Length: 136
Image (cartoon, rainbow, N blue to C red; front, side, top):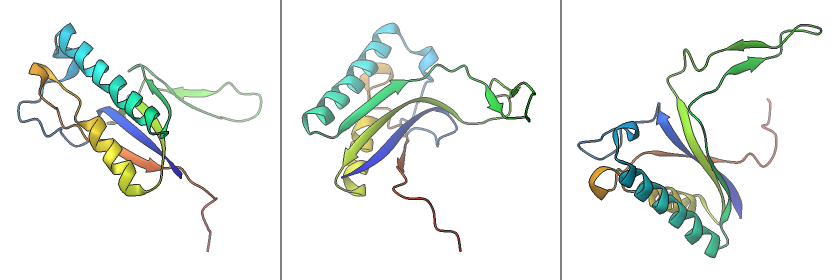
């Protein structure tokens, strides 16, 4: 088994497959409820298969923070002022293969959007690093 992070993007990913894609902030409350219900269904299905580890939605707000030297306050920038990417949420799965991780991501990508049609959003699939990278 190997762990993978499935990332949903608010923005920064390729455009969804849905021809008349409408951003979620323009969906009806019923469409948002249907979308979230489907994502919970995906999590329940993965849980039944023993593949679900964890998931969370993320707020669109955030700040970049970095260490700026001993005795100095953290340096901040943002919220996401220069970033084109914004992560909406994530799910961690533990599956047998990369192919199975891609199947789970495709399932998650089939979540409904406006009018109940699958939006076909791109889900970023990132394997967890199992050991430090080799440096030549």
